[in-house]
Length: 83
Ligand SMILES: [Zn+2]
Image (cartoon, rainbow, N blue to C red; front, top):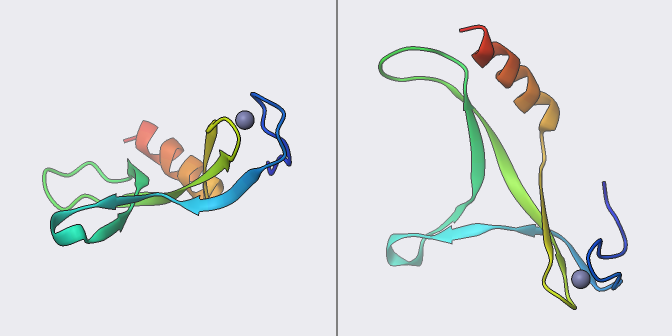
């Protein structure tokens, strides 16, 4: 879903596939991600993770998020629903 123009202002200054990081303790960088639980235990559950990436408009700042593994996340979602 790579669009070459901003869906909000129409600018073509798009910064693709920008990593989104969280600055933790001591400025340690952690990639921001989504997760879906695929087991239903009290402890030590398994998760499917999806790393978030952003396409940013260099004119108005509009940002679109996407993940690198939508198929795996969808499978995890189906599994989670049937737990
Ligand atoms: Zn824009």
